Length: 364
Image (cartoon, rainbow, N blue to C red):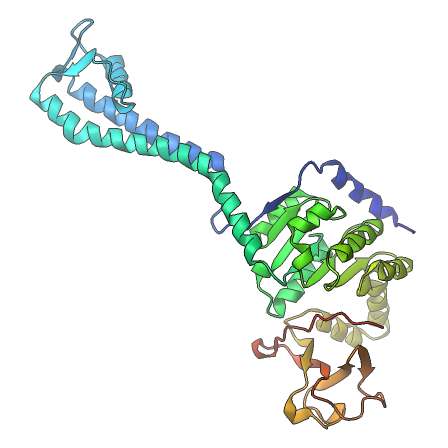
């Protein structure tokens, strides 16, 4: 297998792989250190307020050691009181001091305990809640899309499939980089940190229950291994793979890929077309950008179109899918359209024209 020189840069990602874990997207993201610091600040504020209240009314308190109360004694009393330690060496003796303890310091004590206990409970229950979310996510995930690699190709692939109506909850990203998974989670996608060439990583992404798998790794040899592993786990999913070198495409087909896209060759052909005809290049660029301008969509034949030829259909028909064959619109074998046929058409991109494509595997 021939690998490009750029592929060697991706090897560094494997050296940092130490664990495999699932990361679900969160609606509210706040750093745990910031949460703890905020609560500790609130607790310290309550401590200072209590000490000031005691110091202002220091004549209403007595200290068993020397009988007087200074600023340090006020902080000491506030500390042992809010923490419910209560040694009893400093006590309120006047009616005003006792009323202040009942109606002011006691509520402050309750608030102080709520802040500290709440922080502790949240730290203890965070893992339990995360496990519950993961279990619930796994139990409801069916017929989803697994995207291996969250680089430029992976992001563009996700953008395209989501433009056809696929919900973000139905996309799972797999990448060995924790930063990439953080970015995927920030965009609303579930992510799995790990090497997708390992079956346990793909199992965490529920790949064996996926309906389609998109492989957009940085290295061609990695793409082959991921394809083999994914096909072994899921015999029915449609697997689409992107590779750099065109000579590796047949190997990907043998490994179980339904479609192989050669990124370098595709970009080169688009460059050449744009040189020969800039307008044609603009049209092709428009077609591959789902959701804007012109879109290429796959849809079923409706009853009103049965018996017609592809040229008689209102939409611009490019190809006809009949069984496992893809026929051109001018192919003599097409004849009249059948109800079981599917059409690949070019339409103007509007919210009503977004059609989720059929993802049945196509065979040559």
